[in-house]
Length: 88
Image 1 (tube, helix red, strand yellow):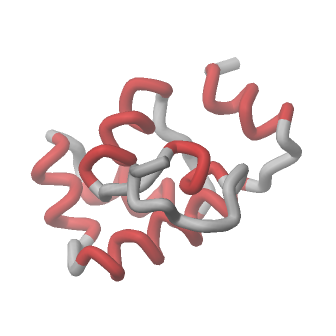
Image 2 (image 1 turned 30 degrees about the horizontal axis):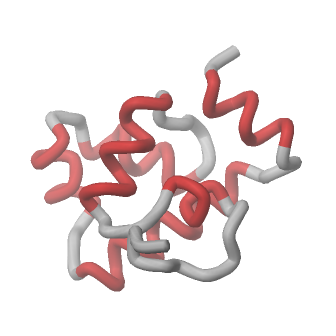
């Protein structure tokens, strides 16, 4: 079981929250799933599976996503309700 999966279980976070937050953050930043995939060296399918809640990123990728999208891992995971834009 991955670290990210453990976080989902510990905080009782559904995958749909991560997918919803990822999609919302992409839209807010004007970034398509295709562009994000290209920038991170992924397939568009991988990003789409995250949005759909079918898969989850590993811990390192979660950090890269948060940095690229100017948000926090806690926001993407649904721990924080407000997006602080990566700032405390």
